[in-house]
Image (cartoon, rainbow, N blue to C red; front, side, top):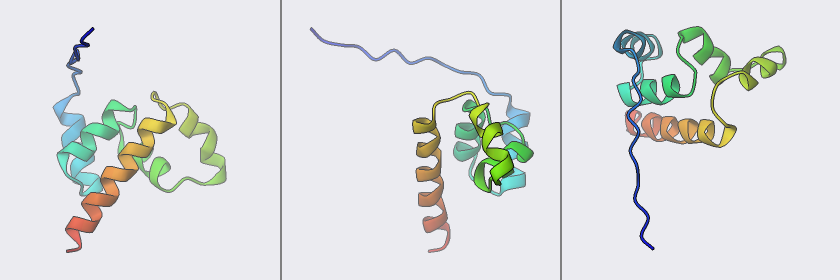
Amino acid sequence: MRKKWIKEEIFVDQQVLDELSAKLTCPPVIAKLLALHGIDTPEKAEIFFTPSSQDLKKLRSFSRPPVKICMIHFFLKIWIRQSNG
């Protein structure tokens, strides 16, 4: 039996993407990945990328499972390597 992928289009507010991309100086695709996983403000992104011990509980409140969050870190590291040459 063949399986068919179903692509679900998820809307993300362009203003949110623009703000994240500008404040984090990252490509729009990274901003979209963050926003899709509930990290939709620069403050949440700051908590996500540089958490303190007090922020660990806040990280659990983001909307997606940790495995997908690891993918964001992976893509971000690739982008940083490419940016640094």
